[in-house]
Amino acid sequence: MKQIAAIGKYWIMVWELFKKPTKWSVMRNLILKEIDELIYGSMGIIVFISFFIGGVVAIQTALNITNPLIPKYLVGFATRQSVILEFAPTFTSIIMAGKVGSYITSSIGTMRVTEQIDALEVMGVNSLNYLVFPKIIAMLMYPFVIAIAMNVGILGGWIAGVFGGFSSSADFINGIQLDFIPYHVFYAFMKTLAFAFIIATVPSFHGYYMKGGALEVGKASTTSFVWTSVVIIITNYTLTQLMLG
Amino acid sequence: MIEVDNIHKSFGESHILKGVSTCFDKGKTNLIIGQSGSGKTVFLKCLLGLFSPEQGSISYNGQIYADLTRDQQRMLRQEMGMVFQGSALFDSMTVAGNVMFPLEMFTKQARSEMEDRVNMVLQRVNLHDAHKKYPSEISGGMQKRVAIARAIVMNPKYLFCDEPNSGLDPKTAIVIDNLIQEITKEYDITTVINTHDMNSVMEIGEKIVFLKNGYKEWEGTKNEIFKTDNEAVTNFVYSSELFKKVRQMYLEERN
Image (tube, rainbow over all chains, first blue to last red):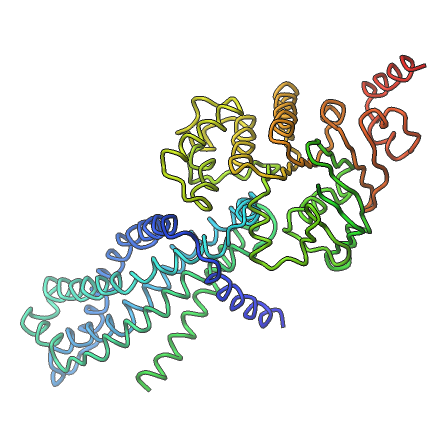
């Protein structure tokens, strides 16, 4: 029952955050700041993780191909499919739920604890619009991050496969070009947009409505990570069923 | 003028405000006093519109807050300035940024005009060299002064302060009290201060409302508080030996 009430409260929050928009000159700066914090600030970790995940996928695929009848280009093919369909959009989003989500919950939660949100409300500012809307707009850049993650992941697979002696460069490149379905990239980007909205709003919800002090800010960050991950995984399943099933 | 009529506020099972009625006059420093847990902060947050009372009404210059549309309520809030207990300055902004924030949000002034106004109010609160500093880089007393500057930058009609001198040394606390009183007179605003600092009561309390267990136990002026026989008020106000002596001297002088 408590969870159902929380879901209702979440959608009311989403509705409220589009009301009484903040002045554009102020909002523009907030959006740029959030792009810097949420998107640009996450590039390093995403590139790092994508590179090694791509490499690991390539190595594991190669090691599991023991039958000589299976063509060697399968290493490149499997790496491409795994990275584009799941590892770049979903795995990266779980990482982002931890990195960006915790940041959002703790920053908004701290503002709640220190009465900064009350200060905004007293001034007549729609605090939800001021705090959450720029994050949603900034997260519209998230598909670009995932596009980079896809490319870096495949590059990581190629480097690990070729320099680790698991595949030849020609076989790997042949594999990543084989049976390419552009719709899969569209599907991945659609998922990414849904995840971007979740990463911006679920942690904001946990930070905005938290009660208590500094300890509760920490607890809210943990709870926010758990729920953001759960919502991402359920959304991933639902969208996969709808778009590929 | 703010009129409060029989307001009640509960959180779950706990009934915090139990029918408080009072009136705060324009151009005066009105103080709400009472022990911790007496409902002072909830009362102040009801006045600010952050909490909605379940029963009763609060009116500002004759306009009942609950009868206003949401946009009208937001407009009214722009006429209010608030100094929070912990200052509630925005960590990510400099001192000047904090003070300029309401101007940026609600006016169409040019940047230079806003900067002039910010400089003026910062000078008014005796802050001259802190413009570019962040809240974490200045002292508690300076943070309070920045909060006051932010609260008055839009020329508010109402100023609310939640324990403005908590955590400050006695000298700085007096400076803050005097500053609030001067601003109240200068801008002719209705000021409501939530405090349990008896120095503030003696220094600046023009009207004092004493809350106890969610009820208004007593109200009166600074001079009346010396004469009152209300046991709850005297137990609270004259709990320290110093204030007992002050009262004794006052009454002896009068006799």
